[in-house]
Structures are given as structure tokens and as C-alpha cells.
Image (tube, rainbow, N blue to C red):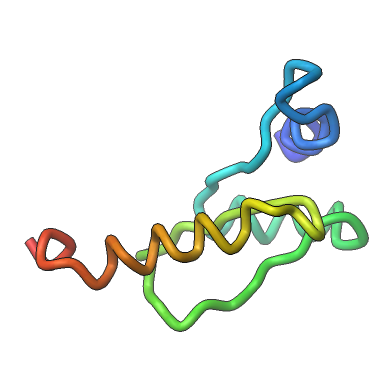
Length: 80
């Protein structure tokens, strides 16, 4: 649920939570509808076929995950 996702992100990995959530775009929009003051969706120029990625605002993981997704999206394997 959105509440569970928020709680896991709030705790972070050191307290039994998570650093990021990878959700379907519908789930991301529902989640952000409830927690738009704490999280945000960043539009990217690459297509990830209906998946969204949720990070706490100012998370240091955003740039690393964005680069990794772009690297995969641009690879020949992605076309296969």
C-alpha cells in the first residue's frame, strides 16, 4: 500500500526499510497523491515502459539509478 511504501522509505535500510521503491506508473501516481510533500517524480527523457521510481526528496540514489536506467535503455540488449 502507499502507507507501507511510505513507512519503508521513511525508515530507510538502516532501520529495516528501503532506499527506493520501484513501482508501476499507476502506483507511483497514487503514492504521490498521498505523499507529494515528501516525494516527487522526476520526468526523464528515456522510456521505462510504464515503471516509475520513487525516492525521498534529495536522495543520493537518484542520479545513480537514473544513469543505470539510461545505460540499460541505450544498450543493444534493451532492444532485444
